[in-house]
Image (cartoon, rainbow, N blue to C red; front, top):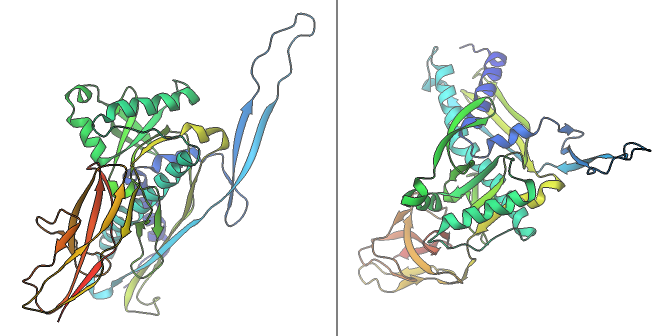
Length: 391
C-alpha cells in the first residue's frame, strides 16, 4: 500500500502547524519570533533594542548624539516533546490512509499538544510575574475591577497604544459575562494569529482569551512516562488573570516535524507509524519583564493526604479524609476514579466535606478516590488518590 511519505509529511506538518495556530490560546506569541536566531541545538538569540531619549537641539553644535543599544540575549530552550503513533494497516483502506491519518493527527494536536503548550506558556509567564511581584490581590466577587487594575499596571509600563491580551480563567470569564454591566462593555473584534484572522471578545480594546482552569496553573509536571502529558504540580496555584502585551513574549518552535513510515518501512508492527516532535519554549525580553501582570489564587496546602483503607465486604465502616488550609474560603468535592492515575473521575454525590464515608455497598475489589480542594469557589488542587481495598 504505497504512500508518498515525503509529500504527506510536508502536507501534514503544514496543516498541523495551522491547526496549532488556530486552536492554541497562546499561539499568537509565535508571531513575535521573526528576529530570533538559532545558534545551537538548544540556544536562541532574541534582540532587545533600547534607545536614548531626545535631548535639546543646540544651534551651535547641532544634534546631540544618541546610541541605539541592541542586546542580543541568549535563551535556552527546554521543552523537547515527542510521541510515536501507530495506525494498524487493517484500520484503513487504500484510499482512506490520508484522510484517517489526518483526522487522527489533527485530533492529537488539538487534544494533547495544544493544551500542553498553552499550560507551559501561561505558567511560565505567570511565574515571571510572581517572581517580580507583579501581582494584585483581587476579589472573586468583583473580577472586573481587578482586570482594569491589571490593565492599568501593564499600560503604565508599555503605554496606551500597545495591543494587550488578557488570559482569563474560565470561571472568571463566566463571572464577567454574567455581569450585566460588564457584558455591555464586551465587544467583538478581529485578532490576527499567524495567517488566521479570529473573532474575539474584548473590553476597552484588550483582547479577552478564556482558558480552561486546568491550563491556568502556576506550575506543572510534564510527564515522561507511558501516559505522558502534564499534570498540575503539588504546589500549583490557579491563575485567575494574566495581562500582557500581545508582543510581550516570544514563542519559539524550532522543530515541529512529522515523520511517516508505511507498514513496509515500519519494523515494529504491520502499521503506519507517525512520529511527531515539537521543540519549543517561550521567552520574554528583559525590557518586557515588568509588562506582565497577574492575579493568582490564594495558596492551598494539603497537610494530610487521604490514606489507603482496607475494609471487609458486608461490614464496611470508616471514611477517607483530607486536611487542607488556605487564606481563602475552602470547599471540597470527592471523586471516584478508574485507577491510580485519576482516569474517568466522577463526582461522589453529597461528598462535599473534608471526610467521605466509604460506601457500604462496595463489593470485593479495589476502589479509588480523591478530593478536589477548592478556594473561593474557583481554584483548586486535587489530593493524592486513596485506594480502598474491599476484601
